[in-house]
Image (tube, rainbow, N blue to C red; front, side, top):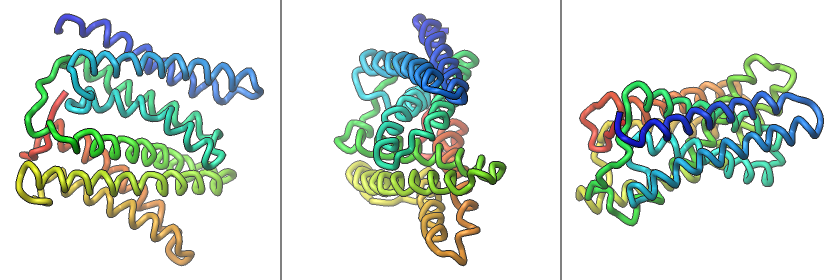
Length: 264
């Protein structure tokens, strides 16, 4: 284990634990339960932010290069996005689902770090040194965060028939917000690819999976708006999330000859 890894791993696990604790506290009734949940959530977010900032300072660039960096930042995204969703859609009831999504991401970071170790310092490849680096990744992080919570709400709606309408509506609002960011992420990526590789689309395996992801959520939005087809819409949201997992994890970690591949 590299010097300096252990303190970071401890902070990551503490942050994950606090995210889960905040999730549980949101089930308590009354203002005190909500206040306690938000305070614990704030503590988890502060630690998460500390890891992101530490990665940024240590490497000297926005920490979007390795899987460790990306998952840490993805966990960071959920609280700011929740604040926006809470304001725009009166979606404060979704708080616990944003908490558990952050917790799952940080748990993944912690397990990956503890079992195989991570390189805290990464060389910044020349291909990534582009003006499109940050907007491309940031758009995808925002869209994937929203779609992840939308997936959680959809899965719960299969079992919670009493609140199915609200859960479905919440998932739809999240995907509606996510889809423009996902589209922009793909658009920025195409411009970036043309600048460094000479073409907008090369049918690289990760490009293909990102396109499949985009198509699944596009189909979800279209099916959701047609009464005769709406009963199939959830299928495409679930498939879209599966495609996100393949795009982010399997293509990068397992390795598939992709020009976009990176590991822990």
